[in-house]
Length: 330
Length: 284
Image (cartoon, rainbow over all chains, first blue to last red; front, side):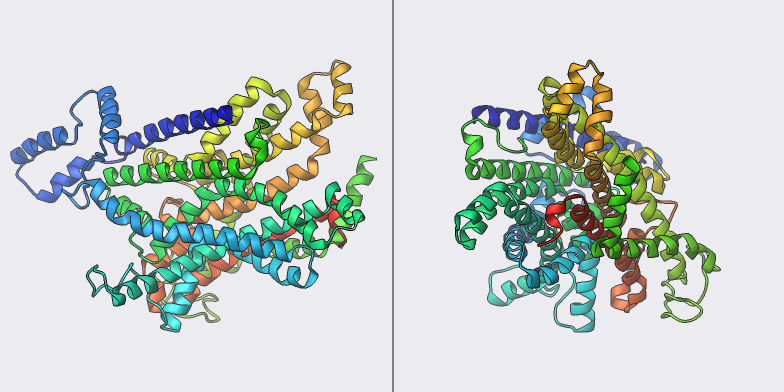
């Protein structure tokens, strides 16, 4: 078990190091000098622009050798300093991201967990029961083949434009200021529902199908047939099958995280939902590479943390990993 | 012997309803992508009529806010989609096969290192890498996007193939080949690969569908091709120019329907093939 963790941690450390290095490259290799853009906005005389350029270069720490910039970047990282945004100058990037992150958690956590839970549950029921299977399977395949943002677009169009039931943009009514009251909470929920639903539905299809196929494989395994011959009740066999089938689904959760996060980014753009995805779009459009850098750091850290959580869960659920047999996929 | 076996697989495949349905849908869109450009008089980004008109005999899928013909964009976009699927899915499968075979057959330190590499590529969000690469290229084409997707999508395939190779490499016939002094490369491609051909083919189909979905997401976020039209790009422009609020449903419905249908057809075909290659799953 110690070895299992040591290896996992090494992979995470290496991944983090590589990802941060790539991330550091973003503003340095982007086309056009972001500082020039910032100065051009101020509309100054040539000499004044020169002075300001020097000031900004040192303010953003770009006047030291490249290797030192790299070291400084790591140090600033551990101090929680992500630099200054250019789009919303002079707000620090960390502040902008802090405002966005709660929305991401509100959207991602329920949709990932609920879709995984519901998908596994429905998939397990659908396996080998002809009537359910024939309706669940096609629906599951259509859902999992749908691009996240397209389902978002469809839902927004159907419920927002045609039926006028739900709002389709923002995280709460534009006429409100965030405060604690029931009308505000209601407004947040109303705006949250459609992006949540589109994330939930697409992921749900994938999990349901995965579980259904797994259960069928398990029910065809020797131990199931053996139990059947012994005359064990069907419910019991299915429960054993479920316990074995859930393991690959947990690994699958780690494999799917990247796809779900990318899907969430696209969905946020459809609904102008003010999470990280929406920030990334704004950052790309406004050439704000420092904000982009900060957003990606957050995504990397989030994905790695979630991966780690999945690993720990796996350890708790699969006894084989505990006795050092590595288990599957380790 | 070999030819007989293949025709047997084909026989069962064509009798399998899921495979037939998937194949039919897929062929329909392939034909549309191939013939479509001949059916239209316009170019994808050409001003071709009044802006934002609904479907009519003149513009089969209506026009965009900029007066572009949606049907033209749609059929050209289908071409991009298939290119991404074949090149991205193909490249991803190829790398996955190479890494999976090497790791699974060699084992030991090689396996450890490749496994680590796989896990790293899996965890790094490919969006980040794409942004940096995109910075070097002022003009990005569909082919670039496909290659990029292939280079980041392989870990999943590598894992699956590694596990399969692992279970095959200690079989008697492999041991026998090894004892007779065959080279590793020959054993891998002569003994192991033929025994998981069906598995490799199914991996390719899944990678094909996955590449199409990834491309759609990248295009939608604005990291797609800059010199061509694609289905994801159509959705991107539609949303950016508020086709939703303007009610121009003919602009954003067709690209999504096409992607869903193609990817769904691939997945359903895959289930059908699974039943063909694995007789246990055929009857319930």
